[in-house]
Image (cartoon, rainbow, N blue to C red; front, side, top):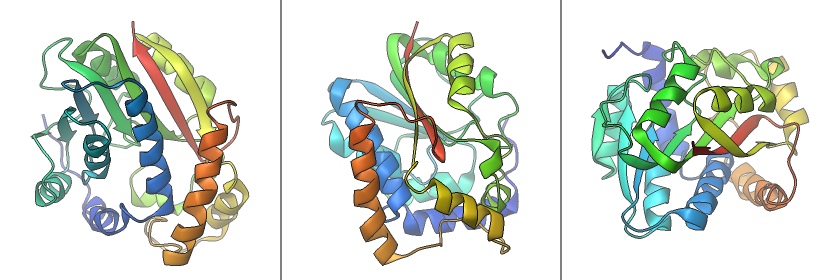
Length: 248
């Protein structure tokens, strides 16, 4: 059953829609997703975006892999409206702990910064549900905020109630029917700046309005270099945890 989204989230969806395609953090995250999909997704595969937000990740995924089919699921009406306005679909309004899909019906599950949210009452149950709807051998691409000591006003604004270590992510995946393939932190190069901002910032709202055109132009290539390095090394620190796992 759908639950109501706190009203502050509606404001944040508007900010996300305006910043998602240009913001350095989203550009880097979506580039990571595209890199994984291009390495293994095939025409005709079905990608489920579990917590699709305003649809930016689905747009990038569809452009990266010709013939990739997609389905977006989100609980927030504002998110689904934004997706429709951008031509993203098909869409289903649902939470991620009980998906209205058949067993083993999708090839890929994408879930970017969803399991940490207050509306997800049981993150392990959500991962079990992702496994249920994914065929054996299918893959999960997961991103989550890292380390409790990085929590700040941003978490309050987006109703974030959990943060994770790489070890916690590995344990959650394993207990939910997934075999981790790669689990690494990222955004390590900006970790000191993130920590300082989270400690000193007093205003309400998320971090998305911070920075601007010049920050986007400089930081996206910097994190692109870090992304290249994480093809070969695993980072123990960063503001996010990025994981790839296979359905057992």
